[in-house]
Length: 360
Image 1 (cartoon, rainbow, N blue to C red):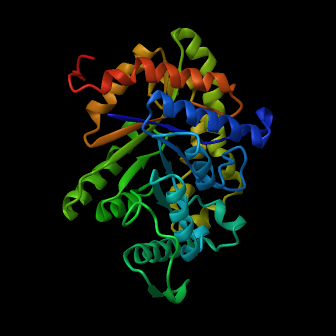
Image 2: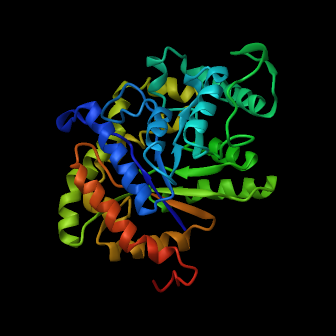
Image 3: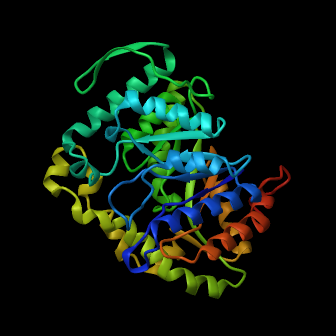
């Protein structure tokens, strides 16, 4: 079993740090994760909403981190394709792959409904732009020179440079709340990323869609589960300390919803999940319920070891668990402590072929 680190880079106003400090701390967390033996580091691409994330250019972060690390891989969850010119973006991805020495992995998404008004992109264009951009990237990877004529992009005889180290392209994932994404991943043989805001029990239906589509198209499923985590050697202390961070994490993920288009517009323009109110409901879930239902894992390494074992048992085709260990406004040393405890006292138990998961 592989284990990774995921960072959302939330910076809530009531606990705000200077932006440069957030980036310095994240780079130190990546260095520590590399030395501790984590397989991957992931963050997202997100613009304009500081309480949600200040991770606007993950490829720049990875290029910097690659100069300070040896083995850890880098994955974006996800690049928001409708915000990019795909002919430009293809070359930028290749440059990042070169600068990370082939340690890049990529995920593609359509994006949250709230980003499009601020990007001056009509909401109804998001799906079409996503699909056209994806097709252009695939042509760029498969051909030295290509042309494309669509509704949003029209180009002739384009040659993308530089070329990535990882041929034909870095490993691809997708995720999110849409059944469409899980079907697309199954069709194309991509991996899928399970959001850190949901326990495994809440996404079993979408995982079945993914597995069935993979089987239909002859692909092997590849599932990465992102899980929010807070560790301490004292269970009660962990429970008490984690509460404000977990509540802020949920609030940060909900914070941009006040800038969403109207419910009627989102329903009419293919954003049913965002119109459902499911995202806003996260902040109403009591902390005790979040812990009990395992929206977040809080406790000692021994307690979390049991949760990892159960997760592996319940999710066939699980390739990696990526731990979210840092929360907006949290002291940097607490993130390092959680990474350290997990890498020393949990990870080794699941990196031996002799492990009995049921009785662990």
